[in-house]
Length: 163
Image (cartoon, helix red, strand yellow):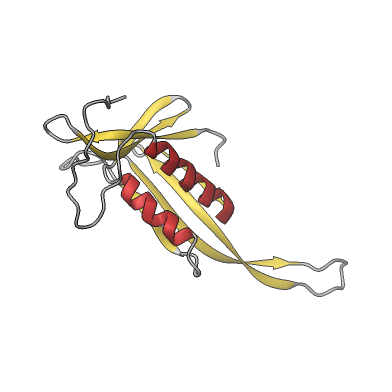
């Protein structure tokens, strides 16, 4: 909303042994590192994508990714909240009647560890495209998202490097 650009890049997340097992997100604002969140982002983005195409579109928090390191006092965050709000739509001239309609918007926010943030307001179509694009890019890492009841380690771990 402030005119700055935020780029969200899926990157492999590594375990303590240096093996890639899932996807995290690297945030870049105006081309500079802004923070990283995850891991587990591909799994939760996949669930968000499923909710976006459901018969009843979601409202409330769609996803919330927090700092990568545990125990840190403050860290980056990347969140999306879907809100419905009423909007008056006039019907023409000064004396014609209008009507209310419900407008659904997604508020996507990113915060760095120092408390600086950036916010974007997206339509439903823009949000669905954004999530689908992130999942496509996450798939290009060669890692499969974590699934419930499945080992967190993926089959292929040797060819991925940290960016």
